[in-house]
Image (tube, rainbow, N blue to C red):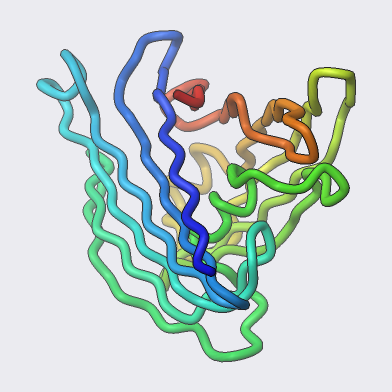
Length: 195
């Protein structure tokens, strides 16, 4: 039986709502297909039309993905990108969407939140890791960092290389479900709050 998980997050910058990010992942057997999109909303959407759409397909089940195909179409306000990318079997890297979902997808309590890897979007490489920091009756708080490795301009590397983040998971029966994630970005702290 195929199983689809859909989650949307309100995105906030400096506490102000700036957009909505929606994700969907369909798993069947040992394969998956996923998609995500982000659009600015409200006043911010009128000023800066930042957007992205990503798709990923491959083997594995979340949060352990082994992508075979990745597509992105984005406009960050600083750069635009549109590309399709194939991953060879056995490539230990993951695409950006697979990395995001490995962190934001619901997971079994016994699986915990620990995850690490290296992303590749056809030009840029980053490493990421997440580990449990504290656990209580209501859930788990985990902290991590994403690090720019290669493919970035000298100016981008001088601007920032390390991006700390934290994720709060609520305990729901035998599952950990993301409640919110807070990420340091070049624009400031961005919060993703589950809707």
